[in-house]
Image (cartoon, rainbow, N blue to C red; front, side, top):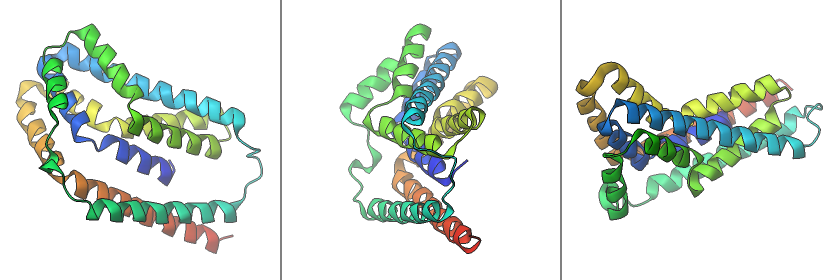
Length: 223
């Protein structure tokens, strides 16, 4: 799995509101939580796969490998990630991770949701708002440019989906296995993410950016 896909997926999944929505659905019951997870993961996978199919049809000839160009682009990508990480690091914390009133109303509705509605809500969140759609489009473009075989493309889309929805399916899986006793640990994790989102995003972007630069430089050495 490419470094770009990992970066896009990590940024997509590190959202306190998405994690809070997951916990709210968990509080409504096991069936609702399972339906929400299935809907969200399936929608994320389907959206990415559709965008990959569209991107592949417009992609240039990928049979000719250009290692130097790919390495240069990867270095630029790594530098861009470090720049974004620096911006995140310096950004003022607004509201200390507080959830807006509209978000609180949404979370309250999710705590009293029916299974069919939970499935539909998962599908809508899996398709995503502007941020998730942009990240999915970038991930799809990366897959379309990197993969030359259908099986490889499906594997990359699956890997991106697993990481990009990690903070949804992992808590729900823990709840399905461990039951209500896992709720305290999940709420502790929610509070930690709400208070440390900036730091978590910074370290994820910075580490992936550095890895991209090092990987590209090593590739240039072996050209």
